[in-house]
Length: 265
Image (tube, rainbow, N blue to C red):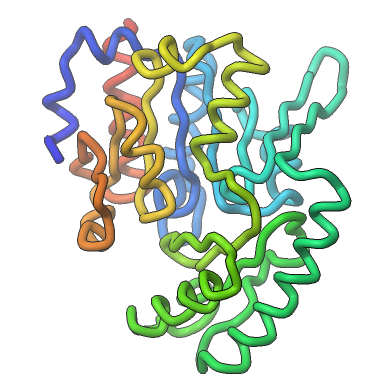
């Protein structure tokens, strides 16, 4: 991982789209600071396409798409995208799975939930689970005392034993049924809503993240950036981001935004 300051100016000037994780990338210790939110707003005002790509739930994503200075949002690790058309006052939604598939998957996830909560002491259902449509989120450090990595791995193994995908974020283990992830839905969104094919996107997109569930994005995009706290998860990553910020969390995101804005200016 090279320091972000080494990102070539020509590369920075080619970037049109900012995709970013939220937790511990834009937020800092669970808080959305004025500096980080201001960075989102400045990028949006400057004409960048700004899209959070998050593991957070559908309920949160409806709010984000409507009220944040963003162009769309990908949620639940790629289960859907939402885009709010402000002129028509209409929410556009696209889901990977059909309503019936979502219903059947929830039955299977409910069984996994019982096994995880019954066999891994100290974990809990994520506090935002009630607002989720497609996945199951198990809290290992957001609202519970931090679990050791061995127990986090144990949660992952229970999901995988049941045939589900499982990804570790900075706060949750998220699991779901379906062959999708953050990258597959981000590609779909860019093509559907912004007319960008993959060859165009590879050289026009920067992705910012902080944890293992961002790995498909780090691998795919040449201009991928980890905020400094990615170092805590570096041992879990086969594909690391190309660049790393000096600042942690929201400070690191603001650092990236400042670089892009200066390059554009």
